[in-house]
Amino acid sequence: MKSNRLQSKKSLDKAEVLWCATSRRQLRLPTTALLIDGAAVDRAKSVRYIDSDLIMRMHVKRTVSRCFATLRQLRQIRRSVSPATFQSLVVTLVLSRLDYGNAVLIGLPAYLVRRLQSVLNASARLIYHTRSADHITDELASLHWLRVPERIEYKVAVLTYKVLHGSAPRYLGPLVPVADLPAGNNRLLVPPVRLTCR
Image (cartoon, rainbow, N blue to C red; front, side, top):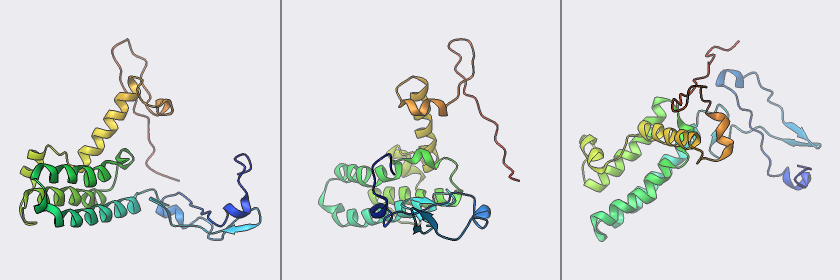
């Protein structure tokens, strides 16, 4: 705060502390307020779209609720515009929210993916005037829309491609390790991951 010339007394009124840890480790964290420059800053369970356990539950909840609110508003004007214009509105106002920053959703739990997929399904049903009991696979295929897990994987693949070919921001470079192989054989290294904690 001092290096950015922020006045701590004024800034601490808006400050929040978020301890990021698994739900099991959350129980071991201190519950008392953190003291910064003599002022107590309370611990938050989530800050904006980020949960303390980094599962992105709050992000998905807010994204889904905002998308459905937009779909309800679009339903009211569906008969007033042409089908092509209506489809463009759905893509612009709803799907852009689903796709915004979705590269961080890689590895999202299945129940949260299903909630995001319900927005995509409802959007296709609204465009094609189908009932909620009808299968939606054909409509998604005719719209050329990928399902939510595939949309996330596509975004990560595009980012990885851009990093490998130098068109991504430089700070992403160290996040994509490449094996030292002969030219033309770019293979990504999969770092070892320990799934157990002690």
